[in-house]
Image 1 (cartoon, rainbow, N blue to C red):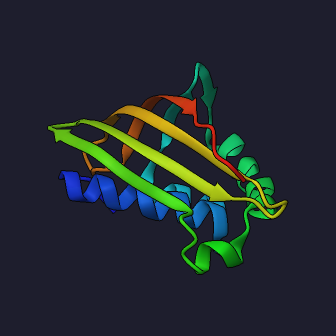
Image 2 (image 1 turned 90 degrees about the horizontal axis):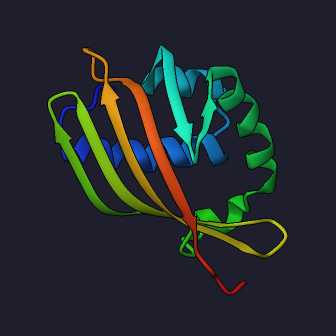
Length: 135
């Protein structure tokens, strides 16, 4: 999947987040679909490489309440803004995830990035702001 417009970016945010959290597909295959092999992902100052993203998917998949997500309980991605200009991307979005322990994780995400020539992601710089959620 190559990102070429705002709709593609919104689709990526939704699909990537969902697939990494609840899919049975191998995390490496998901990452390779959206990112070039030498990508850089900087989240809240921490640089995450491909292997670290793969390793992160396993505990996330154990914590997420998959049944609640399937029931449409408000979990998922809410896109506020997306922008694609040449090889530059930007988005502001909210992630809400119901966890198996009954709590909800919610964060607002501010993301900026650069695309490779094939439309896959080469670099992301993002910061998150945890939201207070009852739950």
